[in-house]
Every structure is written in C-alpha cells, then in structure tokens.
Length: 453
Ligand SMILES: [Zn+2]
Image (cartoon, rainbow, N blue to C red):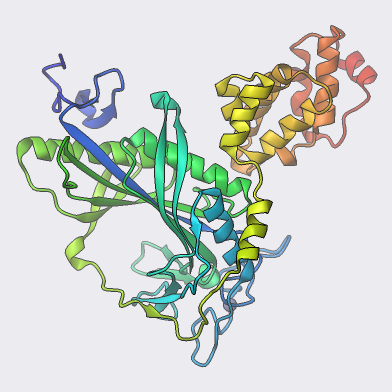
C-alpha cells in the first residue's frame, strides 16, 4: 500500500520532503488509475553548407569569427523581388531521416506552404514550411528504455522541411537584439504520435532520435548548441478513458534531462489537479531549469491562426522513386541494428553495446580496434569504459572519438602490451591522457620503458 503522506498515492511519484520538488520514485508501484500521454516535437537544424533558399553559409568559415548578421542576403532578409531556390541537400536529408524512421517518403507533389505570423525573428513575415503534405510521414522508432528495462514503439507522424528563424538575444535592459545569421537555416520538424507513456520514455526517445540523426549525418543534433530543440506535449487521463486529458506543451528544454524533469513535473501537476477535481487549461509552458518547474507562457486562446497557403514562389517538389531508392541504399547501419549485432556476434553486454553505439564515431573507433585482432570484449572494456569516460571529461570541448590523437592502432598496441603481460593493466590508463594530446604514439618499446611494470 502506498504511503499515507504522499500527495498522489496511486502514482510512482512522491513529494520530496520540504523542498517541494517533485521527484520520481520508480520503487513505488506505477499508477493504476491514471495514464500519461506524451508526444514529442523535435526541430533539428540540417547539416548543409548553405541556407534553405539562398546561398548564405550556415556557419562561419574555418577560423572565422561568428559575427552576428554577417551571413545574410536579400533572399533570407525577405526583400521584395527576390526568389527562393530549394536546397537539394536539405531535401535529401529529410528524406534520409524519413527512411531511417521507416516513414513513407512522398513522391507526389509536395508543396511548400507559407506559415504567416509577425515577429521580429521572421524578416519575411512568414516562414516557408510544409503543412498539408509533409515530405515524410507514417514511420516508427523502436526505443530501448533502460530505466524501465523495456522497449517502446513510438509512431512518427511526420518529418517535414522548413526554415529556421532568427535568434533573439534578450539583453535584459529593456531591449532585444536580433541575429539573422540563423534566419533561413534548413530546419527539420519531426513529430511523434502520442505513444509515449512516461517521462523516462520521452527522454529515451529524444536520445535515440539524436543518435540516428548523427548516424545518418542529418544534423549535429546538439541540444546545448541549439541545433536540436525539443518540445513535449503532455496530458494525463484516467485509465480506460478514450478521451485525451488537457494537453500542455512544454518548451525551453535545453537537455534530455530537462525534458524528463519537465515531463515529471507536469505529470504530477496534472494528477494532483485531477485528484482535486480542478480544471487544467490547455497552454504552452516553459521549463525553468533553476527552479525545477514549468511556468505558463501563453494560453491556447491566444494561439495564432497561421493562414497557411501554398508558397507561390516555389514549384511543388516531386522526388523521383530512383532518388528515394538511391537514398535507401545509402542508409548506414543504424544504432539499434549495430547494438543488436554487437550483442549477437561479438557477445558484448547490452550496456557496453549501448554505450558504444550511442555515437557513430565511438562505434567506428571500437570497430577500428577490433579489426586489429583485439578481442571484442577487451576492446569494449576500454573503449566503452576509460576511453568513453575521457571523452565525457572533454564533452564541453565537443571532443569526439574521431578527434582523439590516440588512434585505434595506438590503443590496439597498448592493449597488446597489457595482454602479453609486458605492462600492468593500469598502465594504459596512466599514460592515456598524454597519448591523447600528443600526435603519435611512441614505439611500444620506449613507451614500455617509460611507463612499464
Ligand atoms: Zn541569404
């Protein structure tokens, strides 16, 4: 029986002492009376050299400073008389994402449409997007949820192509600055069905989608840098009801942890309101990371009518079947398949396989070590363990396995020394940071002399 002092005894949630913070307590039996319904919307900037409809670069050149309002032109500034031209690579990346998510890729006339609204981040007064007929739709993603020891199948409603808005910098002194470098950068929106049943599943979905976008090279999918942005739509209803509860949309989520915490907060808030018989309002809320709570941003009554209509300056897109087939053939092995293969063929533990395949650069590094006849389990111990830990230490510098100076052949050499008993198992760990910063690995003999025994 649930504890008496908790506010929502039927839930796997308890209020944490005096702090008032809501905390998830997986140890308590999961609710039998209420059900959580979550859908996720992701915006991901696509990895293209130029913007969606003009030749402006999406990022500063090598070694160039990132000065505001330097990557702009009459087209992305919405000057009268200019005409947009569709970025082929951006179209391709959305189709590739659709294929990776098992979507139907539309080869009929896909129209771009104008989404009209007035805001300083939108120089044209409208955003070119897709509405009635998206480029990709009707897919699914099987997501491993480690926290629940299960997999969940999440339906993908659509993945469509649009352009990003400018970045607003709120100065806090009564003015706001606008940087139009981001205006017109190719953006993909991926929307799920309301298939997600817990905050942990929401987080797992976000992470799985990020991994796929990186695997196929569609996006850097970096939440902190803003190249991947997530919104969670959450509602709670009584089990057995076929009506959805009042839906709340949560924005301002800067990490997967924020997503999970914000969803947890909302589930508790909704459940408590339902328990008390209080009405909830359909609204958009923002996540306050510092306070650990969501706050109202706007109610749905104020929602815009975007007056979508077909973009008159662009012809309909008609991707050929051959193009779609060519992209399908180009799809790399995806994280789930690679994870299964590591477990099945190399005998790795689900944990090691999960760590290694979460990042394509890390998985490739691991493959590089195994290809040099290092036993898979030994290689996994080091790459998923110490090597991965070092990468995490340097996560702020965005260091990836492909950037580390110690290449797979260097690690293989170190591990051979350990296996042969010429050096102790702790030796690679000690000299690793030096190797990582130096260009090449010294010959094993001199390394052994320097560090051995
Ligand atoms: Zn431009």
